[in-house]
Image (cartoon, rainbow, N blue to C red):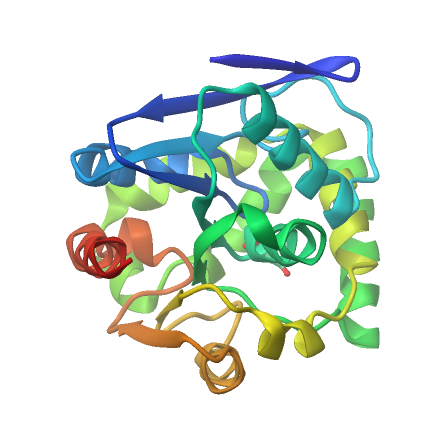
Length: 263
Ligand code: MLT
């Protein structure tokens, strides 16, 4: 489905019945990463997955995309679509940065939060330099270069050695992201706010899911969030990397179903 916003549009899918579950992807990904969740969770929830600005089939948007701007887009989508609020927000990595921005502005929208492969802190000085280099690489060499450089880090060693099909499809998703989208998101992530102090103020029930072999964001970040978010639980997915929802969809969906059932 298409949602017109500013001078462009966001694409989103909506499927199922019951409690609303909004899924927000990471960088440089798209709503395609949530296909196993649309298939596996729509008997239990109304699942909505959206392509953020500059990603997937959303079109066209120049950056930079601050996390606040991406959060506002999600809020506007919730306001105008048939989705019942409050919602459970499930968010992966950069999607988690967006979710923190959304929670800061609109805590009343949240029935629950599922934080996947994400972290609360801002970029270090070194990470900011790396973002600049990635922007330059995207400008000069395009999205395929970025996809090539991320592929072996975004999945776990086990997934890489056993699931060539997933590797191929994730590469296609990343390489299909527009260069403007890549640069816009890198800008926004580089300048994002520190959300560490927000953690203790999150009052909705929260589930944290993290792969034990995440090479992009270490599992210690998930442990830190679990310590600081009052009503939270942590599910570690063994042998999964940065995309546990795709690397072990049955374990992942079971964890989400249990959490939705508990609400
Ligand atoms: C993501 O998966 O969204 C990114 O790896 C997050 C980041 O680069 O900080």
